[in-house]
Length: 130
Length: 422
Image (cartoon, rainbow over all chains, first blue to last red):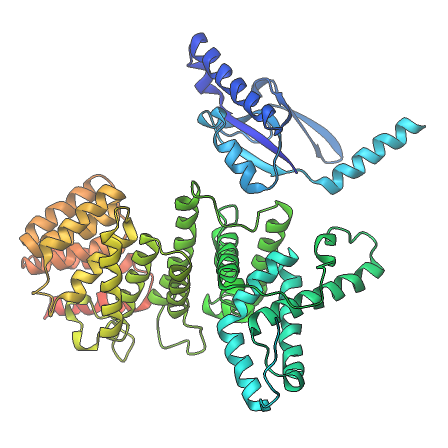
């Protein structure tokens, strides 16, 4: 089963880190990702630019309103997304508890909505077929 | 495997046996069915059908040698029937395939260990940390204690709709987020056990501190919690399980002594100790000793040891306050908190005199902690009164009264204020 792990982090923490510290942290995370790969648990991921580069759009009064910044102005912002393959929630929790990224901020673990993903997939296939 | 006794059993005998089986074993049968069927609702439905089938079948065929296994096997077949029936209408039901063909129609034998493991699985699943605390409590009472939604609602003075929602959402999360039906691994056990123990303790406290004669129909949550603690101890003889059970038994032993006929609270030092339940005290003390003898006891055991020290004293003045202070020191090391610090201060006051206790309490308040906690002001009032500082005592009691939320506590504080005027 696929779990989507949203990695949150306090961006100001990174700003206070030296380049060496930053490189070491990234290397540590990458090394653990490799371990996940070897176990067949790493199903991809995306790193995100700073939340200051985010744009939020929402509908207001029939018009789409564009605002600068992330949807929720909290101290911790989503910094990256990891797709995790695990047999159940306990395994997902156990695997992500050991991820070095958890030192920089919380992970939100969300099961993928497989039903809905099937719909999306069949939609893509249908369009390819035409 | 299923040799029958001759059909000499009469109806009343069968019915009373089923009644006992239902009361004492149905949650174990259910827990095993949840594992076999992978579905809470299907398991519940199938189990009810199996009990109904037993009433008629045992009359003609006699009581099976292993009634519990018979119930599980029968329920399993009933569930398969249900799924096949549903499958006729819904072609998507394929996921249950793994148990649709159990191979033989002969009832299987499930041994004691299987039932025990399954009940543990059920308990750990209902108390999974991915569920909210209210959902953990509702699921535990519903699934592992077998209380009805209505009983849980009335025990927590809330609506049945609210409880039903918590249960439905909890079960949905277990299914959809794929919370596995398993006993945690040795590595995760301490943490996962903590959440089980805290659910049991929350249930106990709800029954203990909310006790009043006004709600005669409320399920006695304290005795449910104690029962759960006993079951858990049987399944998992861990020192903290012993500690929690001991703590609950020792608190419970004072139930009749801690309120008067009007439902007013009587503090420990004023209680009629002859009303304390000696049977529960003996059990509690024995458990504390066993838990303390293990190397890895924790905070429940220390709290139980404090309670045991009170239980051992013939009167408030004969209490071994030095031992109690030492236990609070231990508790502060294990789990530092201002509330524990306050309790320790009160014990120190009993050992070394009110002024020393008062100084410790003022230190907590000076740090800005527990300002809104009624009991710190009540304790301050009590110690000031003992020192003859009537004005200070009155001010503290008044503050405590403004902050107290429970009626019996408010009445006690009002009484203290009146006594000061005498």
